[in-house]
Image (cartoon, rainbow, N blue to C red; front, side, top):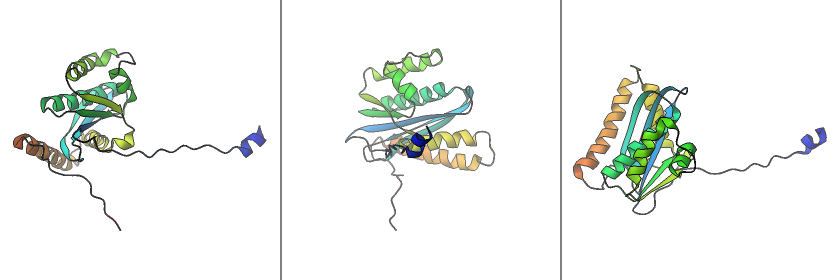
Length: 195
């Protein structure tokens, strides 16, 4: 046994994970739920982008006492509802919850605590061109950041100013898109800088 362990060389598999642009003339909605404890305090976030990567809409909200499954389901419902309302399709919805992906695809049974949310998702997707995808956390960074920011700022007076600034930024992006009724969003993409 010792000689086997001494000669053992692990086989390491690596995979590069990053957010990808949507297909040409498609929209992409990334969703995420954040929680501590199960049940415990939780929040969710979503962001909708066009095929150029421009943020069209972003939302992050504290849910209070909830479970991980409810937080993830609520994020998907809110993202899909917004996209249906604004006719943003064809659409790709990405979640880092394999559980939600399998439930939406009908592979796994629906837990009792998210039955209402799953029914809403099924109603909304029925007449809408939408693809649900699982993505690793590293490919879901904006939604993950927003959900964690709202979660960590909840009830904190020191972060209240930052939270208000973030909400103002998200609302201004949303309002510019909603008021103009165009698909010419404000670009808040990160720029690459070379050394």
